[in-house]
Length: 346
Ligand code: ASP
Image (tube, rainbow, N blue to C red):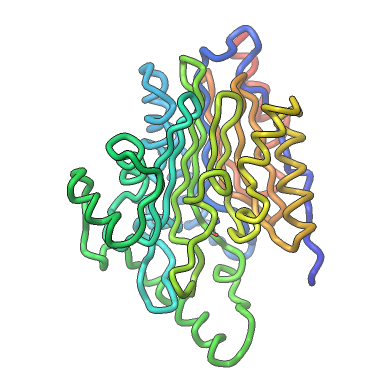
């Protein structure tokens, strides 16, 4: 197996100054890991950066208005689901059978309530259905037709499946199918490496955390395959101390119960968030042959954004209200990015 490049892309930005602990909201988002530099033309890169900034502002407006962390997460993720540049909602990848099959989860760290859905084809914003499962059902996870029947009852918007289709994703599937036919492993940069899932973690003014993740999964997936994103503890988890959303090769996140593993290090072993996230994302998962990244946030507003791929679409916003956005490993984690945030709070 090709050795993975593991970057020192891990950061604890400490966006919330100590004195503001748990009262200055923080929002962190990702739009998927695995970005390969040559894959992004400037126009697409600008679109991605603008969408991330919009999602941050939308989510942060909720938090600044005193709304719960769940609202910050939901608002940010609906913006990204509606944007065709990401593998969630509109623009999701196609399954082997040529469908868009969507998964999502959301969790409230304060109450440990959670909602998740998997394998839906008509739900315009899967994160809203996950939220409805959390709030309006006595269950945690609903799948397939049943989840869509619940969506109707809960008043969650359904659309014709053609809504999710983009030509780029369709062509991506065609390349993957050809490689299947030729008996080759997927070589296409986007098919093999560019996952594009979206996720958010938020700390609200009450000091409560939440996490959410939404995805179309992996191109060319078959047999009702479900990845880590909607599995509470694997791709999505939040408790009183820590919130995590993952992105990457989902099977490995399930096997390591990645998001929960990070939070348990923080909650039970009192490992600093940065180290906890690094141990799971940059050590455990690559050691097993997986790859990807995660965003993590603790109750004091510390952020970690580790990834072991070429890049991870990501953004964060704190007390100064400035939307910081980064894609590659050599940006966005520098002290220069952090300084204005810290200064603005002194
Ligand atoms: N983790 C997702 C999955 O395996 C893919 C991604 O992060 O883009 O379904």
